[in-house]
Amino acid sequence: MRIKEIKHIKRLRKNANPYKILKYLAVGSGIILISLIAPTSGAILVKELLNGYIRRRAFEKQRFLKDLKNLQIRKLISYKELDNGIVEIAITNEGKQQWLIYKIDELQLKKPKHWDRKWRLIIFDIPHHLKKNRDVLSQKLRQLQFHPLQKSVYLIPYPCEDEIDFLTTILEIRKYILILYVNHFEGEEKFKHHFGI
Image 1 (cartoon, helix red, strand yellow):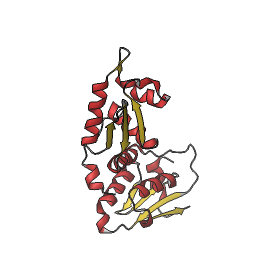
Image 2: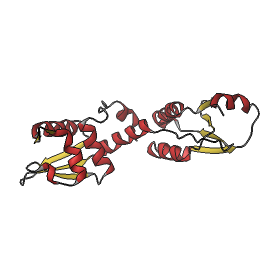
Image 3: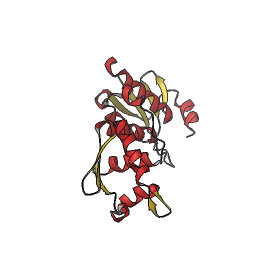
Image 4: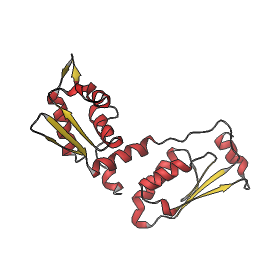
């Protein structure tokens, strides 16, 4: 994944209409057909997508097409108007990658009510040519409140396997990551205090 390129793309404002278009494409089949003649006659999800373009019960076709054009200029989608008044919209590879970056941004750790008395030690040795990916990983681990023990060693007392798998798979660095489970280690009391357990 070309993290350097993707991270410098101007972000879509969350829950704005263009963001919803990209989200709908990313979590769906990647392609949608929308009638410009009767836009609200489609599936429920299409109606929800177009809800932001309905004002006083009228479909704001020009605003919708302007948003599509802007998304296409940014290479996040491609679209074309067909002869029968249908617009075909498809997500691009850049759009998929941008959506994954949004998902990384939204990633959260669920803290259980009761600690299972296991520490998770995340260790990685990522090659220099993947430095950008490594930096994104380190930044996200800190945001998720993993405690850095060394430059590439992080500690957390909560289950995190699914989140680590998701994050490192997207960043294409999963094979460089180890998750170790530790029941006890010298000096753990200060980390219990740090994590409030």
